[in-house]
Length: 584
Image (tube, rainbow, N blue to C red; front, side):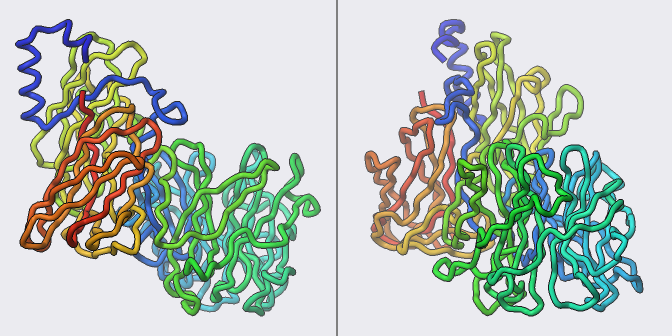
């Protein structure tokens, strides 16, 4: 900003300041992209918590493509539903049933475990179904008729090998430009055990060779709850040229349901069963202390920036839940030096998990352009009508300020000024937008300013996704952002801990806390960043469900920051924390 001030008159500065104040826009110092702890600013970060959706989502399958996560799952066994979300959090996701089976066919009933995949330029959904009798379960394929996973699908028929035996949980493996089908099936016609099979394919819906037995449930943990004994829920995992098949063993109706692993020897033929090695113990199993039971039938997906691998699986919260209350959960995969994956123990519902790397950033390539003067980003959910923080990433080497108009729906547009930057240098400008309840589309207008945009994001941190201590508790209400808030009790040193809070560059930032004080007197709460100085915030008295916006200026580093709120003088309620601006 110092360089800019040298180039313009004092009068121009005052005019610009007035415009900024009137529009609610905040400008921060220009910074390079290489400002984060790992060399790159990769979004505001934050945390989330399991479960991923409020409804039962057994047998989840997740695909990330073109800026969206898509999840399908066993939806009551009657149809195929897909959910669409900008982040791995599907709690406010768009939902749509994309296919209903016709009545009175071999595939009209008991639709299980749909698998969504993108293969050879098209979306495919593989699912198991029968005519009402389990012994007639077979695999079937749908092919997309549009380039939208939420669009229409054509029925392509049964996916079967020459035996035509019972089959479920099919998934296509793409390996070295060849296609293979991997599924769970019976050896004969009786429900004794389910094996893992593989067969070559000539196209995404046609098996072209005999099936090969890769694994059968012969380990003690795979037999728990049986008979029948189980290998099912196969999922493909790849890393650095290595190929793995995860699968679920033990009865899916029991808390012993767990995730095992098959590893292919490097460079080997996937159809050579002797080249697959089975892990003796499951890589994920129930954890009674964390209250996670029956973790299984998983899928794999990468982080938005492609640097991390995540496992998504279903589990229940009770050891007697059986097939009820199965909801999708997620956690990051770690990798050992020998190239083997580590899934780790399943995380409790109380654990704040750092979001996948690159989450929350909406790059230009994932927007919708309508000419030179309009760029739109859809799929932005809000459970309430309220203003939200808005951060623009841009580069402007024109040596002049550019002006951008931004808004969502019928709300008034905010004017955002993009100061000049050096060549190949990124700038960041904070503003605020009004979002409506439901799914929003953010529209950006501005000609040359549109061309300067790199990405946008909404740097908000929901309190219910923070790490909570015993001095705080969740509050359910449709009046809160994301339908929940956190009540903090009197006292409590670390009542709410916001972790993985990131900014483009170190400096002093204005943060806004939306907080309620339903008492008849002012209360105080302490606000601490990275274990440093303590800020005491005064929260005015108010009515129940009446939230005040309290601002505080704090120093943040370019690495992940931790914000702790606690030591309240009375009972308070926190909805969210926003990053509003960087001060100069």
